[in-house]
Length: 254
Image (tube, rainbow, N blue to C red; front, side):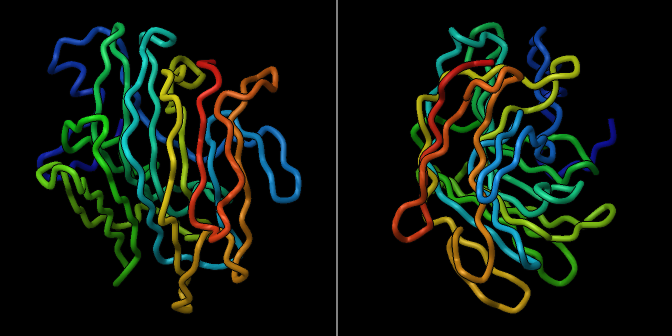
């Protein structure tokens, strides 16, 4: 496992070792694994939310309140919420946000970033459910500024500047609820987070045009997380009238 460490951060796997946790922790938040695609809609094994495509993106941001999770349905499960560039039509993801995971039935919450596949998930702070977060990724000067702001508790905010370790095409922007990788060859089961509402969702392209998820300058795709039998795990609502908000709802753990 290759790691690119940020000052003051550690991987979730290392955190598990340091705290004496026996259960595995998430390693990666990976590109989408598409199961079925229709025009404007996709089912996926690991993502729910929205992706915008059709231009080269240079920034993305979104806001949400960190949900509390119920570990009874997934005692060693995990769920992540993030915004990012790439991963929908490419093999890299430049991303940051919040994550909650259950360790033998006990919930833990963190903020994090990852430049997939250059490093594993990098956690930075312990956070609290109910805190409001704004997450962003910006490409500028050949580098990526990944920033998560806890507007409820400013001490749990961070910003890190990273370089792409490979080919980062910036071919998509995303606002995502994810089942992290990996348990064996599969994804972590999802603890019950009830619902999460992404708001103030916006992106910008290299031409300097800024707009919401469904701006006419790009194409918006709705993503629904399903299991191998096609049953919905996390549903995705329609966008609001402004095109900058939607809700993901938990349906099942696996």
